[in-house]
Length: 222
Image (cartoon, rainbow, N blue to C red; front, side):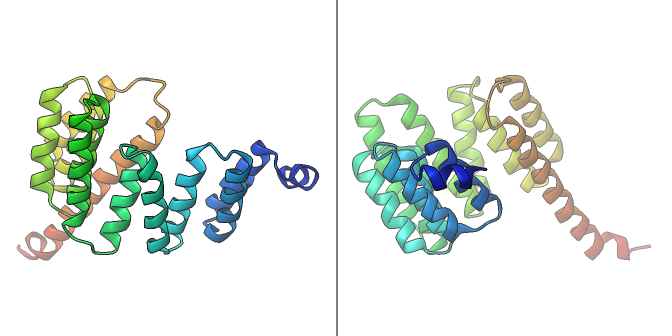
């Protein structure tokens, strides 16, 4: 139906969104890029579609172009966490090593100097998440615990710390943190169902690793 609408009105924003997300659900990144660009033309002041174009280039494997686009956004909005996150992941995938954390630390210092407290906390959380991505779980856990101590009511570090503990096969500690997360997260939080899937995946991955360890050692003993 949305394609019929677009045939009559190529700039219809709602129809373009439907077309974009339909392409994304089918992992048709090239086709989705076309609709992301059309949305930028329809809403030139909306940064969402610039971020979407960068993300789609990343998903399509064009990391250099994705990195360029994220940097363009950050040149205008240097503390936009979604752009920092996207850039950090691109840099990680391109094996740019410690420059990922140098970039994030620079953004963190800017947030501190400008007294942008929410952005400062968001960037600290992003730094911890990138340590998880790089497999540096002990470093990530320490940073997440600091964030929990600073603001125990923020559900996000509890969730991330729970995932770290699950990856470390610390099931009881992970379950406690997931329970804390559930007690704090607002009912109306838009990604609540998605995060529930993430929690389940973390538990399954931890169990899979434990099962592999048992298979290689304990089950061979009689």
